[in-house]
Each structure stands twice: as structure tokens, then as C-alpha cells.
Length: 319
Image (cartoon, rainbow, N blue to C red; front, side):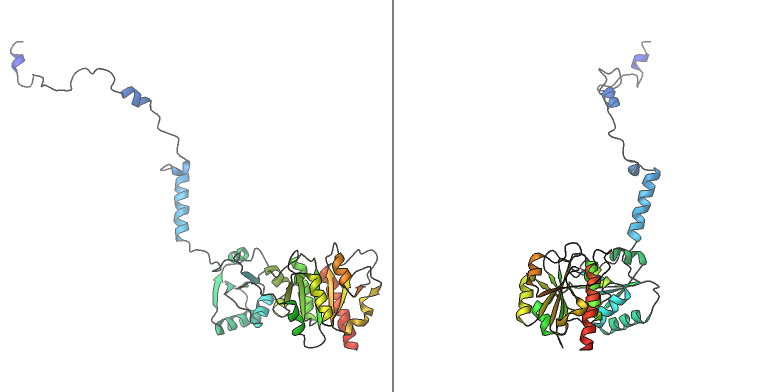
């Protein structure tokens, strides 16, 4: 109607967007665009995996950090574990950084002695769970206690002679690479009052936490010296008046009949597989053996050392 064209509000204002559009305006293109890769389950809000991840993160924030040695066990320091090894190290005055004691450990006189010494020396005593001690000691039989000690300080080969109170008796190991054998040798050496054990600097076992454990603390009583050249060190002992006797199962002379046992003596023990090396054998004044049954091929270094030291001690006691 003609009158309606003048009705207020019926007139379209200039610039109005009402009306048909030219083209889609990009609506179809936006509708076809992807939403990106599907997020992981742990990143989806409301997903059970995301809830478990958030709960684990909250638990980790609440859990106190594990107690570790300040310098790290792998940072040159060693953990000595086991009640005998620990109490022997403490008695010998070995420097101790920390004492680790298992929670609710069954206390005995050895643990009580360690705690008394720790109190007197103002050492830090840290409680640890059994699982923490298992991890720190790499699954060793720690018996609920361990101590962190600095790196072992090796003696000089000449020091072993200087510290001898009576007739010197030294054990030298040639090519023994098993730390358990070295620990067992040290245990025998401590039992028979040996003046020291000499090991080569290369291709040989050194004093580690395993040696401390196997020796039951004898490392604290028996010094271990390292020689840059084992043959040269043996020659120096010979110049100082010692007899150098190598152990060989095929030797014609038995250790039980060793006439030089009462003299200053260096007993050289080779590896179980190869025995004495050629140059070391040539350096020895003589070679002695242990009589064993023919069906047994050989004795390992630790057993051979223990038997030999017993025979030498028996000969010396008779003389």
C-alpha cells in the first residue's frame, strides 16, 4: 500500500547488512578446516588417563625427595654396607660422610657402637627405608646399615715394608680382576696379620664397595698398595732383602715345605685362569705350590692365598 512505504521503521537504512550476501563469505572453507591432531589421552580433559596423570603429579609433589649421598655414590665415593664392614671401618677411623640406618633395624652391639661413634664424631645419621638402602647399595646385603666413605687412599709399595712390625710378609696379586677375590684375599690377610697387599694399577681389581663387603672390614686394617709396574715393585722388594715366591699348582716345592717362610717374604698370586704372567714368574726367586687332588684343576686366588698364608704362619710359629 502506498501509505505503508512511509511507515516509520519500514524504510531500510543505508549501510544495512540485511539482504542476500554475495558469495559464501568463507563459511564453507571454515567448515572444512580440520581441528588438528587428536590429543593424547593424558591431555584430554575428563579422560581417565588425564585424571591418573594429574593424581600422579600431585603425589610426586607431596612425596619428599629420596635421601642420596651428597656427592653421589658414583662421584668417587663408596658406600660400605654390612654390619661387620661398617663397624670395622668406623673402628679404624675411616672418614665417614653419612651413616644410613634402616628404619626399625634390629639393633645389636655393632650398630650401637657405630651410633656411639657417630655421635662422638658429629656424623650425620640418616634414616632410610629398606628399599632406599637396597637402591643405594645396589642390592647388597646391607643388614640395615651403610656408610658413605671417601675414595680409598692407596699406599705406596715401599710403605708396606716400612709398616712391618716383625718379619715382613706381603701378598702381591698378579692379574686378579675379580673384586670378590680381592676382598677374600684381604680377609685372609687380616686374619694372619699380613703387612699389606700389593695390586697392579692396571688390569686389576681395586678397592670398591664390593671389596669392603667381602673383606668384612679387613680393608680398614690391611693397607693396599698400587704399583704402576708390578715387576719393578717386586724387584725393589728383592733389593730390600725380601724373597719373592710365586704360587703355581704345578711347582715341585710345596708351600708347606717352604724353607724361606721365616724370611722377609712376598707371596705372589696369579689369576685363576692364566696364573702368573711370564715376566712376574721370571722375577720370582722361586715357585711353590699347594698339594691338591688331581681331579681338581686349580684353586682360585682367594683360596690359594688363604691356604698359603696358613702354611707360612704355621712354619713361622714353629720356628
